[in-house]
Amino acid sequence: MIANRCRLHITRENFVWWTTPIIRDLAGPFETVIATGAAALVAYRLGQSQISVAKTQAEIAERNWQTSNEKIVLELFERRLAIYEEIRGVIGESAQAVRPI
Image (cartoon, rainbow, N blue to C red; front, top):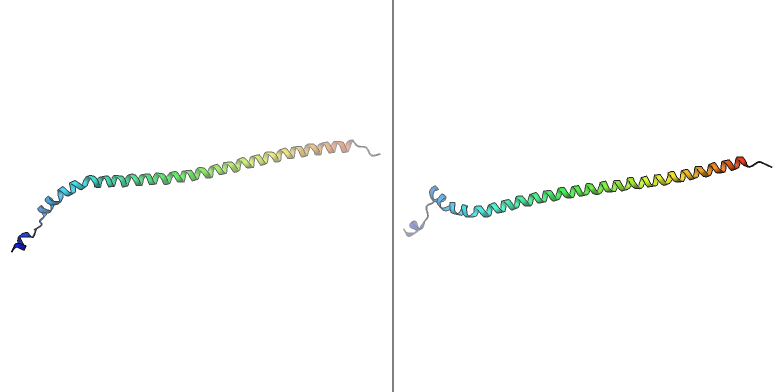
């Protein structure tokens, strides 16, 4: 008989009355955990996008360097070609000026 008296009979009203304070007590920490998780997810996603932007910037910088390097090589070639044509012209004029004996 004593065992029957110690047994807790849980009804819907008892369950709500018993769990409501627990839920209220855990709502604040649970909310904090959810907000922290959301903030961490947003920070992670922003970090990933920044990494992507940094990689793209590095690729663009490398292409700019290649373009600048090719421009310098082309300018040097044009200078050499101009010098070559000048020397060729001078040699041609001097060859025409020389009379055979």
